[in-house]
Image (cartoon, rainbow, N blue to C red; front, top):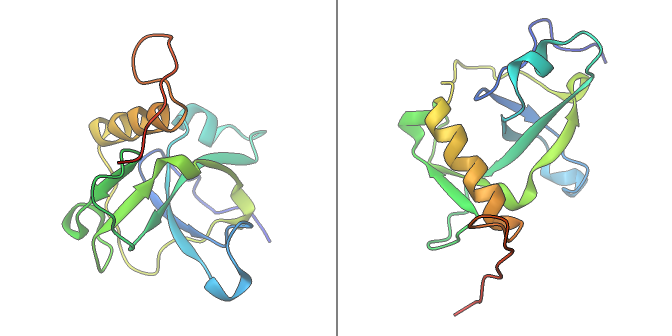
Amino acid sequence: MPSPVQPPLCGEIWFVQLPSDPPAKGIRPVVIVSLDARNRHERADTVLAVPLTSSMHKDVPTHLLLPSGETGLPSDAAARAEDVTVIRKENLFPSKTRLRRLSDRRICELAGKVSVAMGCTTGSERHTIDKP
């Protein structure tokens, strides 16, 4: 499968069949979070992405809630920062409809959620998240 004609850019939503998903699940949206300089580089064949889900759970510290008006997706979604992953560009599919690009501010919020998923919520000390 050839790489996308236009390289994916940070904040864009693309679709992919994640290897961690069951085959019957099909493709799902992901938000690209790697730097554009890397995304555009001809020798970089992968991007860093965070999967989106329509399964909403309140008070999950590693999820960033994204209203449909912000993404252009048909329903609200949550970015699952705990599932940040590397995806080969050749496995990405563009959306069939026009989607919006997340702002730099929202990408930085998502980066904060990745830090929480790694237990690095303040400074260089690791913290654990206790379930209620």
